[in-house]
Image 1 (spheres, rainbow, N blue to C red):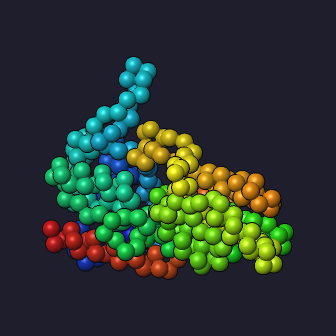
Image 2 (image 1 turned 45 degrees about the vertical axis):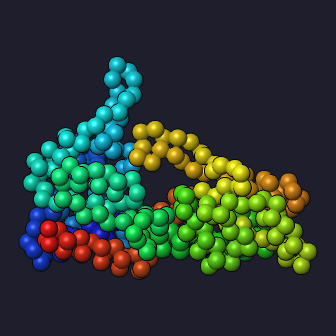
Length: 298
């Protein structure tokens, strides 16, 4: 996201002499009026940094903001308060950067009269109307490198290795990392799997002398006539369902049905961090620069 911030700041200040205000911690900053004026110097040295210098949060939906009343948690619509803070800071247009949840909130603000430019950002690569979202290719590269490393230990110890990757209900990371990393079985949410067919692929590889197998599983994968594995629910989040654990479910079934030693690796948040690769830096820069142009065109 820092590449977007950098491009917005540079284009807005150098080309149009605009003031740029950043809201800290995402929508929470709008609700509580936590701001930072962004100068050209703030855009220096951040292109290679992952994350965001402004901070972010996925728990602070102004249309469903968690509050405690009488010792009990409830939710309130504080969007008018957020809009007042926008006006207090003389914001003429809001550039919202995020995935499905963040951009849905941005659309709701747009419907209340706030000029919005939305920039698609998610490692899941699952936003309607986009070919690719920035963040995806960096996460893909991280997952591929992990599978490369797991290949060597799988071969050395003659094991079945199950690798669970992120992506929520979209299989892009699993599919492309699995292909690029030489996965033998790839399970994605879009195609419910038959565990017996998975096991048969593994057995057949061993019959042909292959002493190891790599199974890449998207966290949102589910069996035929089954449901996704939910790790937990976070009710005050804009994205309350936390997927996770399908890798262990698949791994346990493979070991039980085939008798082959099976280990599971869950890559987790390593896919969401680190320095972005060149593709994502360039794509995010283009998004940020164009967002300012759209603001100027009204």
